[in-house]
Image (cartoon, rainbow, N blue to C red; front, side, top):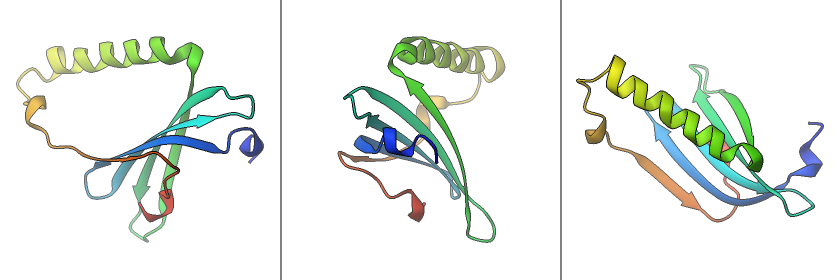
Length: 106
């Protein structure tokens, strides 16, 4: 990958299991110039046991806008589209790592 050498250092990782076949990874990475950014990866296990991955990069100048827009969107779904759904009673499985995580096993 073209940008691979620019951001190799994993600082912190959180894994969120979402069902039997989907996992989300939230990884804080650093650049060679000690700048930080967030990657969010969706990893989905396919029927043939391969994995399909989608990744989004969030840079520091967009953190606040991204979080605010995400919260606004989720709030809209909760209040306008699914007001009777019990979001508070959903269970979550998260793993925290201070080092890099192995995304090949999920």
